[in-house]
Length: 394
Figure 1 (tube, one colour):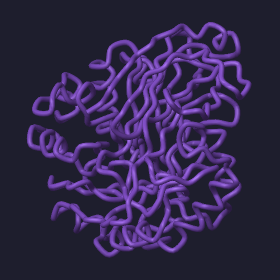
Figure 2: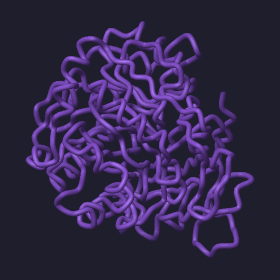
Figure 3: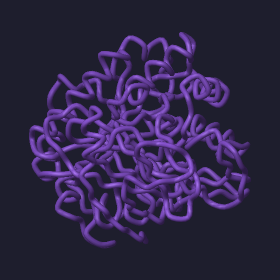
């Protein structure tokens, strides 16, 4: 399903510019994944640039260290057209990767990926897939309002653990093999790609360029069906993803989500865990300020990528606390993953803390990156070691 090319490199220059160790990443999307090297010269002048093969538009690259990108839906969210910020096209948008820095004392090599944003068509339909138990609780959660969320209280219904996927058939595979309970899933779009597993599907508007009337239909159907939440734009602080400044993102977010405020939980646009100025939590603070007190938000949406092991897991958990302390909103973590080191120990420790330690009760939902072969799956029919841990009770 994926074509992959991995080029690790030590980003020495960027490390001297403030990158101390592991970058936590950004995102991935769609079928074709291309791993590219840093330090590629293109027409735009940057110290470090990364481009997707065949894509002439470079992504601005802050200081580099490790990250892994996330994949957009095979089950494409569908709309009448796809546009970049400069052009419109009926083809899938190919997005270029970026690298990010995080405070750390461990120097890691850079691994870069890119992928396409969801493809579009004019025949979009939203299909709700929920469990009976979840439906009875999410209808209550849908009544959550922004004012309630601003208190920082957590109102998670059902299990926190979720799945990000491209291939809907894999959801059935892991759910049937799991001793843990998966409560929700998403595919970076707002159709479910033929999902048949008995699990809540959460629609997402990947970016303003993917908006049309089919989003309104999907969001309205989600409200009617008692779905728990709607997800807003993907990594606006990443030049290779939704790529919006905070003020512009706030304008679009308000335009496309205000209609549903108070009827269903609404997430803020997801952010990278970059520690660079103006990105990550800095970008989120600017967004919250620009969006104002009446902004249609009930939780913040975080991504994190970094080192493995128990120490790496604690760094991840500390980042979640930092975000919660800054925003006082419940937290969804819709992407997180390990870029180096011991993934098994990381997962075992992090899952136990997220599920059982009240310190992290503000985390309503989380989804490890991600449900695909080479990640949570060893093959289309069997789980990887990480997948087995993720599918186990903690």
